[in-house]
Length: 226
Length: 226
DNA sequence: ATCGAGATGTGATATAAATCACATTATAAA
DNA sequence: TTTATAATGTGATTTATATCACATCTCGAT
Image (spheres, rainbow over the protein chains, first blue to last red):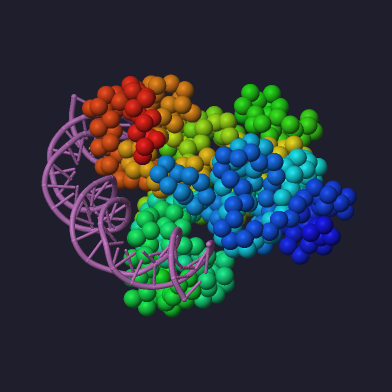
C-alpha cells in the first residue's frame, strides 16, 4: 500500500479530484488504505473516531443498535465517503459500519479533512453535495418505510439492488434475509415469506443467494403500491 | 425589512457569523426576509428552487408526499437553515416546508450561497457541521421509528417537543393529531387513543392543544421500551 | 350569535405482520 | 468428512394497529 498514490488513484472521490498537487502530497502522507473482508467491522458505534472513511471499492452497511434490535440504516456502494457525520466530529460514533463484501477503505485523518474544507472551497462544496444527496435519498426511503407494507419494501430493495448496485437482473444478494429484515424494518420470517411468495409468482427466482429478477414490471408495481 | 442588516441580526446562523464585512454587504443585497403565518407553505415539493432558506424565527415542518399519504420528515426550530439539500441543487424540490407557527425566513440566492462555500472555508465548514448533525438526528429517529410501537413514538415526540423546542413541561402543541400521526407514521385515530390513554394514566394533561407533562419518568420509560 | 368545516374521541371489526415453534438446509470450522 | 452453527421455510397463533363508522367538539368566518 505504501507505493500507492492518491493522485493517480482510479477511485478518487469527486471531492479529492479538486485537490492541488500540494494537497495530494499531504493526503498521501496522512491516509491509510485498509482491506476488509465480508463481515468485518470497519468502525463501531460507541467507539471514538479520528478518521474519515472513504469506500474505495466494495459495499458497506451502516447500522446501529435500535431500541429492540439492530437497524441497518443504509447500504453504501463504492466509491463514496461513508459515515462522515459520525466520524467527522471527532466524538463517539453514533453508528457502525461493516463490510458486506470484500472492500478497500481509505482512512483520512479528520483534522486533515477539516483543513481541506477550510482551505479548499471546491473540496468543501463536493462534500456538501454528497451529504445533500444522501439526505434526499434517506428521506425518500424514510417516507416509504413508514407507509409501504412489507412486500412493497422488499420489492423496492430488490429493484434498488439490481439498479443501483449490481446493474443487472441477476446478482448475488449480499445480505442475509435477517439483514434484509433489519434494513426494511420487519421480521426475518416475513422476509422469507415474501421472497417465497415472489418466487412462486414467478417475479423472481432464487437459489441460495443468487437472485434473478424475472418480472420487473410487477415487482415495480408492488413496490409503488406498497 | 429594507433597513434590516444581516451583520447585526441577532438571529445569525453559526455559518453566517464567520462572514467578512465584504461578504455581509453582498449578503444584504441578495437576501429577502419574509414572514409566514401558521399553515403557510414556504416551498413546495415539485417546484423549482433558487433560494436557500434560513429559519430566523419560528417552527417549520418538512414534509413530502409518501406512497399513500403525507409524511412529515422533520420539525425544524429556529435558528437553522432548512431544506439545504433540496433547494441547493437548483433543481426540483424533493419535499415541502410549511410554517407551523408564525415564522420569519431569510431567502438567500443559491449562487451566492455556493460562492460563500467556495470562498469561505469556515462558512462551508459550519454548513457541513449542520448537515452532519441533522443526519445523526434523522438516523436516530429512523431506527426508533422502525422498531418502537405507537405509544413509544408518541411519548418520544412529546418529550422531544418539551425538551428541544419549548424547554418546558407545559406548552402549546403546534401540530394537529393528524399531523402528529404523519410524523410518527401511524393513523390519526391511534394518536388520539394513545393521548387519551396517557391522559387517563396521569402521564400528561391536555385541554385543546395545551399539553402538560405530568409524569416524565414513566413517559420516558414508555419511549425507551417502545 | 350562527354556521360549517375541520379536529377529535371512541367503539367495532378487519388485517398485516410479529411471534412462537420446529423442520430443513446451507456453511464454515474441526 | 464430520460436526456445529447459522440461515432459511412454513404452519399456527397472537397482537398491534389500521380502518370504518359515527358522535361530539372547537374555532374561525360570516
